[in-house]
Image 1 (cartoon, rainbow, N blue to C red):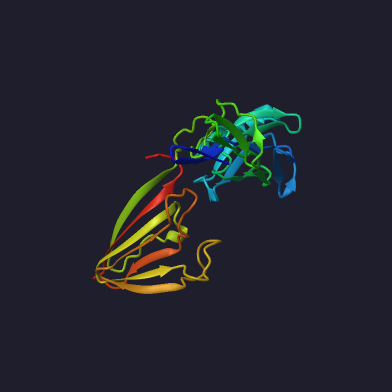
Image 2: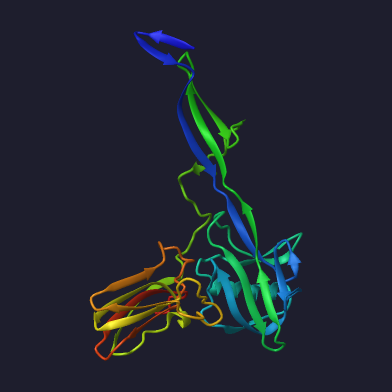
Length: 313
C-alpha cells in the first residue's frame, strides 16, 4: 500500500530500525571427586572411582587450552573426604589457573559436593584433565571436568511506522517469533562482548629472551625447552649456521622429534623467524628447532618469546 503527499511516495508499513540484542550466556566448569557424575569424572588408574583423603599427592599436570599450566610437578596434600578435600583441591586450582576461574565448593542434588568455576563466557577458556600421582600408593589420579553451558539468547528489536505515521516497537526471537520485550537489565547489544562477573588479569605472561652464540656452539634445543616458545628469530652475523627443524613427518612427542627432517645451512646476513599466528594463549611453536655454528668464525643471535604461567620475575 502506498500513500502520496506533495510528490513524496512512502511505502508503508516501513521498518525504521532492526537492532540485534542478546542476553549474554554463561557456563560453569565443574570437577567432582566421586567417580562418574554429571559434575565431572574422577578415576584411579583409569577406573572410575572416588578420590579423597590423599595426604601425599604429586600434581603432575592440568590441561587448559590444550597446554599444561603446571610448570613443575609439586607435592600437595588433599584432606579428608567431602568439603575439606574439595576445599584443598579448589585452592590448588585457584593457585595455578592463569585465567582466574574462581574455583569454589558447590553442592547440588545430583552431585552432592563438587568444585565449580565462577560464571564464565559460553565459549573461550577450555579447561581439561587434572592429573596427579599418589606417592604413597603409586596410583594415578585423574579429574575430568564437565561444562554446563547456557548459550547467548538473541533478540531483534524492530521499530516500524504504519501508513498513518504511527510508530511501534516489537521484539522477535532468533526464530523470528514475536515475543515479549526482554528485561532491559539483562540485555546488551549483540556487538558487546561480555564476561559475567569480574575477570582479573591473568597471571600468565609472555617473556622475551635473547642469546648470542659463536663458533660451533649450539643454541638451546627448543624441543626439550621447558617453556612454551611463541616466536623464535635467528640472525646470522658472520659465518654460517646449521638450522635443524622438525619438518614434515617428524614427531615431537615422547622426548622430542625422532629426526630433524628439515636441515639447512643459513649464510651471514640472513634473519629468519618462526612464530604462531596472533596472540592466542593456547598456541605455541612445536619447539623442535635448534641452531649450530658450522665453523669457528660463526656468530649468530637467537631471540624468542616464551609463555610463563606464573609472573615470578
